[in-house]
Image 1 (spheres, rainbow, N blue to C red):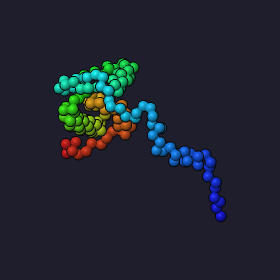
Image 2 (tube, rainbow, N blue to C red; image 1 turned 60 degrees about the vertical axis):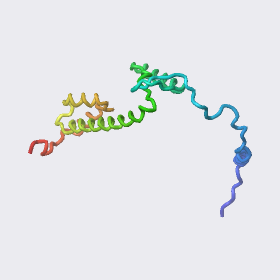
Image 3 (tube, rainbow, N blue to C red; image 1 turned 180 degrees about the vertical axis):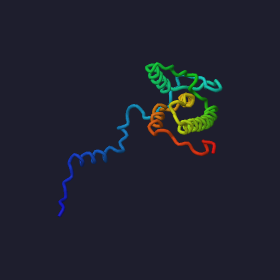
Image 4 (cartoon, rainbow, N blue to C red; image 1 turned 90 degrees about the vertical axis):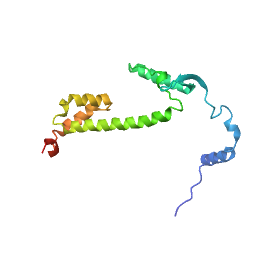
Length: 160
């Protein structure tokens, strides 16, 4: 036989308070949740040079990223090389997708060369190409291939 538990008085009080105040507009007094963006600067579009309005948030984000880059001893972002106007943005997105696909295909081709190599560590040109293409972990890839040991060449590669 199960006993009915008495409701927790704190939970009951919270539910009653929620029911009384859920449609109360006075809770939202103060700063509005949304405000129109404040444009404080204009930067050149990186392709056509048209001035593009920039918000306070964008300036703050640029400052944050530049401080991170300075700590890494890297060059800061140039504000004239990071903004696109409304006309150039669709063209850039189409170009970026094609460029990324080509880069991925090129990386895959170079990785296949390393895998088919008898000694992947000695393939200095392929390793350099992988680093130039921005492979995230060339050292890890080489360690993984070295741990597997020498690979078997297929008949097609032997010339048979």
